[in-house]
Length: 192
Image (cartoon, rainbow, N blue to C red):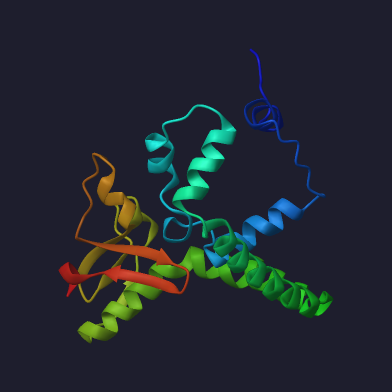
């Protein structure tokens, strides 16, 4: 096996030898993610552009791209630079107390919620249906039942479960959920 490092690829194909201090590329990647500085609406659809590119060398590519998108690089730089300033402000507000609160939220609260959200789904749907709910007992869990709304058994599965070809016979209604950054989206129409 032969390995060509990313650094070797860049140097070999472009002739550039750009070096960044430790952690800088991670910070810039984070800033770019948040600022969306290199999205197609800012810099163009690069995967399509590289296919359209008629040349062969890096210098030809650079000239061709900049002729087609003369402001793209500076637009991206402006977006990312503004986000780096936002990150500097955020970094300066972080202290030991804040780190401790963040770790507790992640390790204690979010872990507990992530492992127990089935009950939240059951509770929400039972409130809508105005029926009691309960979590299943181990024997019911073995049959694929996660809980009951009234007397109706339900299985609670991630939306990705729909795309899996599992040969399971789940008892009752299947309720699908999708975890988002701001909560859960429940597809409980069949249960209502």
